[in-house]
Image 1: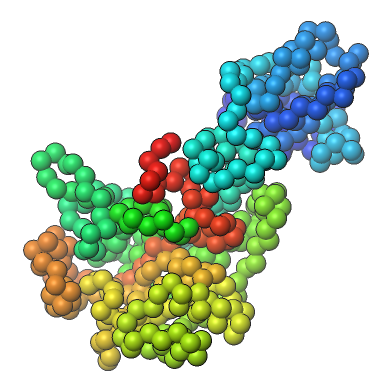
Image 2 (image 1 turned 90 degrees about the vertical axis):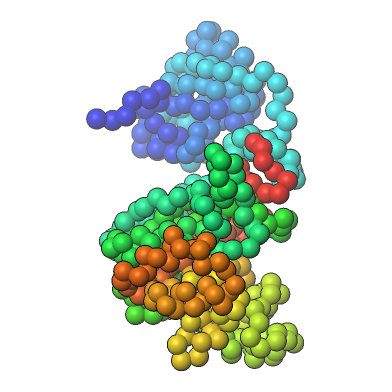
Length: 442
């Protein structure tokens, strides 16, 4: 049974070949062009826009009076007949029989919906609900939705189960001060930094192919165009792996399926944003420590051996990969263990390096992952090495006493992937309602 609503069609569903068909649309008056004897009403819904043509002498006096009351952003229902018209947008228009005004603005809008006026990002975010009415802004989130949908489709095909892990935790999952403490009855608690540890516990419980779509939080007082205090990720964990390369292959296939979904189903949105999707070839290039130090030094960037690289290095490596491999995506593998969390697996033959993998896209880190340490004695040894209290992680480590398979995973930042895919200048543009050090509303 078809879901009933006030409309019979979204605007994008109406084609020139529907000529003569009666339809009902519902949305907002996006723009009005009054040429005297004829008035063009552009009606907008979440799928697009369509022209409603009102000609004096061809409609009733009552309908004419209703159109005189219309102004931009009125909420309306229009019932009418589709007419094929080569000079109308997308070759079709609606000749109205009825127009009903459901609501209308009681104040002048504080920002322009038409997009003709340049508005700075802070102002746009202050009026985010109105900003989202702009078709080019809404297109970002329609693309983001299809991106995640494509990734989910791939994971489901590969027999992964969707799970939901806690957002409230009793101890910081990665140590450090970048956690948000919360009031939890009479106990100390925190918002999670990453669903990492609970995903691992689910895998060693026996559900060894899982993914979790949800938010994480980091209390970083950062004002860069790449950082958020609240972000969402597609977090994937898989058991019975050979090594971190299984995780890398899984991750690149996941990315490609997401991009293919967008390319296939978001043609109008991509056109609106003047973007084309390029499907990358696989496998993605891989750069490894310690070779990375030599590559950076060739470009005049000296990083002490055994140390992590910085933001400038990330951009240098992206330029290097683009020139050498013609790829916007690449993996960085075998980070120094001392700069990574306790749960990553060391390379047994050379333990200063970890089987820890970052995915970089157009010079920005999309994800961090790799192979986890599954051997109880090694985990305990690494926790001590990091100077973390064993007691604080007992809830996690105890379960590794009872048999855990080799496993690994990653967490792809959905907003960062969207930002890089669409070449947005600021990650806040890829979030409906961003949370930053200075922004809690709306």
